[in-house]
Amino acid sequence: MDSRTIEITKRFQDSWETTQRIFDLFDNSGFEKLKPVKKFIAELKEKGENNHFRIGTSLYRLIISRSIEHGLRDDQKRIMIDTIALNDYEIIFSDGFKKYRQYRISNLNDNRLTKILETLKETLAD
View 1 (cartoon, helix red, strand yellow):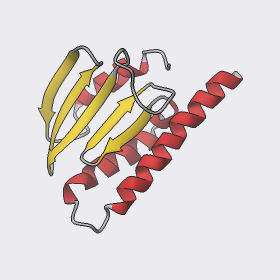
View 2 (view 1 turned 135 degrees about the horizontal axis):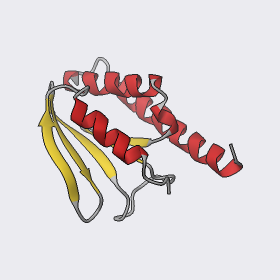
View 3 (view 1 turned 90 degrees about the vertical axis):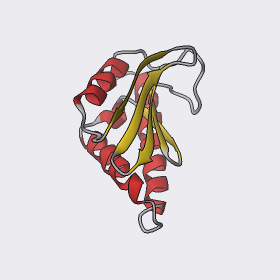
C-alpha cells in the first residue's frame, strides 16, 4: 500500500472512531431509535468497511461517503441514512446535484442498502 492510500485509510478509520464515540453518548439518553444505526455502524466496521468509507453524523442522520476530507463537495456522492423512527429509515444516494436512489426501509440490513454501499465503494476516494 502506498503512503497516499495509507493516509486515506487512516482518515476513513478515524471518522468511524469519532462517529462511534458520538453514538456512545446516546446509549442511555432516550435515543432508542438510534440504537439500530449504532449496531449497523459496528457491523459495517466488523466487515472492514471503515477502510473504504468516511462516515459522519448529524444527530439523526448518518452520512457515508468516499471523501478524504471532512465535509462534502457538491460533486461527491454520498449515502444519507435518516432515522425517522425506530426501524424506519429514509435512504438517499446522491451527490449535491442529483438523487440517484431514494427509499424507505425498516431494516438496515436491507439488500438495497447493501447494493448502494457496493456502488459507492467503486467510486474514487477524493
